[in-house]
Length: 385
Ligand code: ATP
Ligand code: MG
Image (cartoon, rainbow, N blue to C red):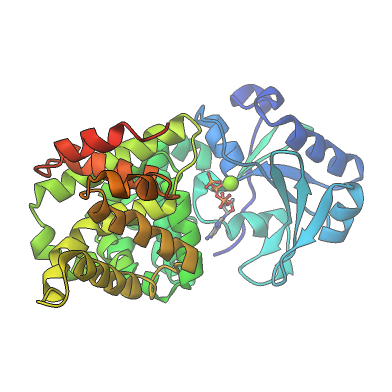
């Protein structure tokens, strides 16, 4: 694809004003500009504000080199080896300043080239705080008005370059209530297997962004619609027929997603291990029989089934040891909670993940698992908020 000249949207013709933007981001834009460089707010910061949504972070693009940016802000540091960026540090946030770059190489470029390498048209809107203008390179404003996610360039090619863009399209569609353009959907269907080539650490990062999107319910439904879910969570491909129409399992996931989305709304933290514990609960239940024997009791068999699932999962999404441990603790404690004896009480309620485990127990009850009411009643007296 060739670079394009942008449409220039004057201040009166769009709804973005400095007052909406984070003060520190505006200060950075001004300071870079005063030093004689160009600087724009770009990406999610512009897109979300135009949609009337509070952005998660503010990204800045400039023609100043990282060294030049670094020298302007005492509270900043150059990070990254392959492509270097500047992080400007504040008490509660980091603002990222990136030098215009060309393609996926580590070469600096012009603003036109910088726009071309971005994924979606709505992510290539550049706001100039000095003039109040927005540079719109690929009709992103029109796509925003139409609530549409459209790729810059050919989706097939852009997904081959970087398969993570597939998850980004799905995440943004769910989070921002945008429709996915049909060229993107088509390419997604044919290129989805490329996700398995993405380094597992990067998929973990992406999963975390999904979990914190506040739109899990919709997002996971979309991941399923596009058959990406079974790729990301291999046990779901293995148990496809067993899980299909399993209403208690479907309820458990649904209730957990709703609860997570509610927590994001209330700015409460989320526990990624809890998400995995929910996702793996029924798969491990369904698999545990294979491990049961005279010698191996149910709890131990469940633990083995869970280990097997985690081992396979790790080949797709990286799972740090700590994460695996917490999933194990939260899940296996389900069996200990059935043990309502005074003798074990102190040992159980003082466990680090007792609360998370109680929450899983409660969700299991609410999703329709039988016989758990007395257990929930018993432990609810000991849970702290
Ligand atoms: P949010 O921060 O809400 O998740 P965002 O669009 O700002 O959404 P970031 O990951 O912060 O996402 O990236 C900032 C910008 O960088 C994007 O808007 C996009 O222009 C560009 N970008 C990020 N990831 C990619 C990618 N994989 N391919 C092409 N461009 C990308
Ligand atoms: Mg962003």
